[in-house]
Length: 503
Image (cartoon, rainbow, N blue to C red):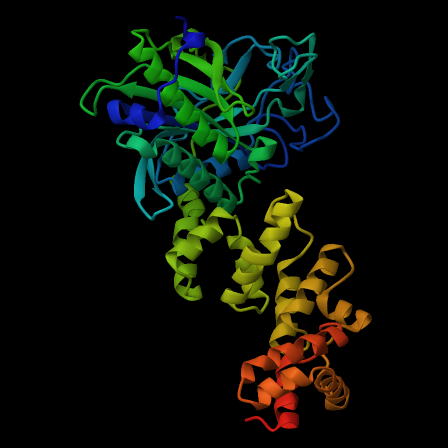
């Protein structure tokens, strides 16, 4: 039996017999105007090989200059992760050859990272807190992007040729490396995904990156190893590269635990290697043997001076940090009166910012949650897009709810108006006005509709007058239909009761 046809062990069985240990390396692209070491624009989706300079391409004679804003962003990240900030640090050359790296080395940091010895608390879905220790957060530049053409998988294996876009080469990155994360047991996949989500939220709060995983702004390398028990030495790890969604992170961890358990059961060794995750199957495949630090032949970058952020500057940056996501969630939980479960649902749906903005625009917290977690969430799911991608601004949702609160429209009409808002037909109040959708509360109009309903339904009238007041609903329905759903249902009920002499 080979490693390629190994029998997977059931996940629950695997974690009952082995102790999984995680390690996660998260790369975040910084949202600076220009690249890490040159003046090329740092933009997404430009025409291939247009956002470049001689320095981006590593051409002879082109010298790098450090981007001060990138240094500031790296310090912001380090402080938010409770790290120590180095008084002196330097860049190094990480030597390796790959077509997307024209210099044949990556400018990174090795033994002197800008931030080190930190931690972050990660909240799981049931409220349990897991503290993840941060070994280091260091600065580096991104590589270009290879596109493999002609194969079935988009990977180099089976491709007929490859294309390289160097626009991403030199984009500033911070790589955050955890220490081994033990004691996760069967919750290892959830811990891994929750940790990366926590970092993503911090990056957004700090405004250092758009942190859009689907664009590759945030990518995770997921390390997994197994050992016999919590007292045993760490096992050999695998590193699954560039996993870029929370669900994929969970699936990667589950698969690697099951796969490695299968190898150990078969008496085979775990190979220290990089691996690739496959969305279609949920499995991983072998990449290349994992290099150790000495294989990269690091040495100090001779073209860059050391970075020495003054303590005054570091403290100035610290004082400018915004409220971080965990503290913000605790504050909003108290202000809004949501249950813990309601708040977790909001967070998992990425609706927190939308609800907060809707509340700021004048809606109550509960009504804002009702819209974003109800009708809007349903529409987003039907359209297979994220909530934030819907063409409805929080201010429009607050305006819509305001019309309901003022009894100018009812809930049914509000949903019709929302559809028109999403179709780009304007703001709610203008749509209600132009379409004539306001609730009808004029007694002269409603009385005629009530009289017609009474005349058309003598059996229902008899039930009502006989004491079955709940039967009024059978009269309200036709009236609402006759008024296109615009009748004031409360006033209609009052008129019916007055007409029939029912108290």
